Image 1 (cartoon, helix red, strand yellow):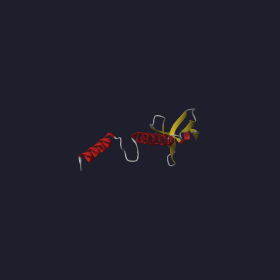
Image 2 (image 1 turned 120 degrees about the vertical axis):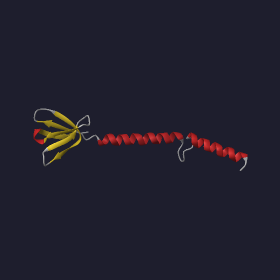
Image 3 (image 1 turned 135 degrees about the vertical axis):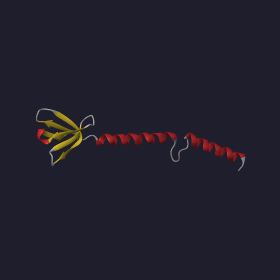
Image 4 (image 1 turned 45 degrees about the vertical axis):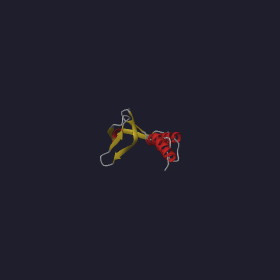
Length: 103
């Protein structure tokens, strides 16, 4: 190798270390790709939380449950996560109706 080849190799390594030479992507498109992947991931996570349920009790309370409540057929206890994410339980006999919130 002569001196010109060494300088070219050194410049290529410097560009690679600065992040200016990502294979198949420029620096800007790499950042845009990461932003797109992050946005799509967040959207999918939020879409999974979109099927909330509303529970109306016999005493007039309205409870919003995150996701679908689980019913224990043996005990009659309904387990759900409230709007703060805390797990709660209620007896099935105290519930007037339960429905999914429409989107």
